[in-house]
Length: 590
Ligand code: AGP
Image (cartoon, rainbow, N blue to C red):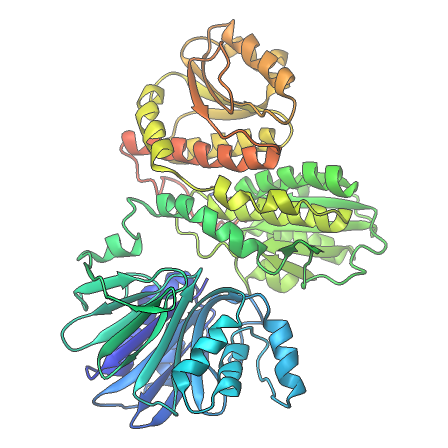
């Protein structure tokens, strides 16, 4: 996830771009840059790290009067966060910023290299601008159209070229982009935040939209025809804009999951097989087993991974909690692949466990959401989850993408390809209005009582643990996750009408066994909410997931439901959903 800004006007262009980037810093901040077209000349600045470094670097650059500018704040996907890899990217006389991933960049690059075109960066973005100039005869818009038609993947992009110095080109597929305006200025941005308070009207571009701005006129093409501009009003409140209309960041992040899950898969999942450019073919040489180590939600994702790796890759996999692993005097052998999972990449317990594994000479792999974090820098190899910045303290989209990486890894190591199923997950993560409304209504019945049991079997057991953790973190109600079959070994003693059970009942995995466990609780008069594709008689409440042919599709649908349920209960209790008491987003202490 990156952020892009564009500005056309005469009102302090440099500050407009830098202010816009600051508003988008939540989308990534490992490097930033801008290009300004002024009187036919392109002026560009880039810096590694946060926007303040770019501000410092460009402090002596003065520009007055009318100009066109594009700017970018980066969240690295292809290539390390260096100045060369920072945007804008250049060809001979053009400059580009881009958010998204170009899946076929490698083949375009090879094709251009054969023509003698050189590349400076490791990014996918540089191929767009180089391809544009290669396509350019004398009609820049035609060259731009030809270029975007050759791209596969996701992009929101802005391009400036000295061949048409008064024009800005734009296109959007997959990644967000809007155009906003007031009487004298035109803005582009990845979200509302940079333009609220500056512009009055907005158009949220749709996938496939492209066009250009020239002489203060916007030419927007939809389905390859120039289309009318349908402006709507911009919200006036900044925080509202950052949350994109959602009540909480957590809510926004729950809704984002169906998109970020695609980002996680891009370039890795295809009909031909699973591919990780981060790993080489011999990665598993000498490895006979895997240890996964993590904390909290990341640990729960790791537990899902342990089921999937054993089932799909047939590799013995053990699981460790970071804080326990450190002091248990673990026996570490070099035939073990040590996988650490962390959203932040800074969790002290996980980091220390990784140090121990490295010291013992184990091969290490990090699954992480933050490039260049301490864990990423230390591990031998890293797979980035690409969830984008997660602001809500209660992790949601990071979990969804961690599970996705582990599932893809189980296919990669097992040399199998569950392609058809992977392709259904984005849809499974969509939140429909009907579902959200149902959960909102139901939540009022689950505000009191003396506690919650979340139960499930197999991968639904870690999902039960995660569902219970979400609820405790933001509602402050007591909740425990249990393997459904374990209830009769003690916890069932607590069962009564004030004990709420949230039962995760898969149609595709151990249906009868889990159903019997639900019935055992029901006959002790526990109040039960079952989440399943078909209603069972012994349940008090029921939330339906779609009929499907694979347990991972059910898994993701149930994940969304448990996250929404926790959030709606917390909202009804009047809690601060995004910043719950006693917690911090990044736990850098032991
Ligand atoms: C999740 O909702 C929590 N806030 C917490 O359990 C978190 O997952 C844990 O602290 C680990 O963090 P990490 O993924 O950044 O390492």
